[in-house]
Length: 270
Image (tube, rainbow, N blue to C red; front, side, top):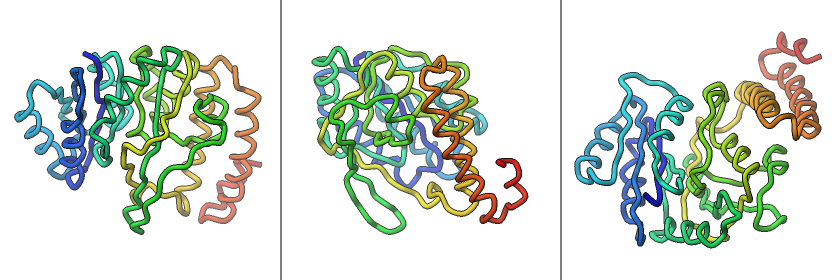
């Protein structure tokens, strides 16, 4: 198998058909499989996924737990089902806008053996405001480094990514607060991360994903947990940089704790 399309979906009834159609409409000279984990949605997402599986049994592997297991456990379970030489990332609420996306990225990785991952420009749609824009990438050019990612300048949208299937999802993955960034960091230790300057995907921004009020505080706590774990797992290779990030995040936590409904938390960061 050349490519595994690694997908997860939860309460994506509104989007999942457009997403899956964008995968099935890919024009390729190789075989690909769709690995889809559906995490007990409260809408019709699972029903729709099963309908697609029944129509295209040769393409789909579904992972359908009996109860909601959460994003990280779902990622581990579905990753282990991927058999492709390459893995393309996609969530059920995004979609691919270019029918040659998979072929383009496979050709790129085939022709760039030093690259372990490639990603491309995306169109971003804010569902609340209707504002649409294209992602802007760093001036450093085609390669993305671990240092750049650790500083929080992550220009990578999930539906733009294709990686070589050369790493396993580690056991500590389930303890992390979010999933894509650890994979990018681990891959950056194996080779180069390169960029394709072409819009081939659409990424949606949902209101629930925006940092406002106390959610800013909580997300900063998640950031600190993430950096603590990854610092250890990367053998403290970037500890000097991570320490600077800790100082920045703790200063922000102090401010938020003092000003956003939770002043009793402020003393924890002094």
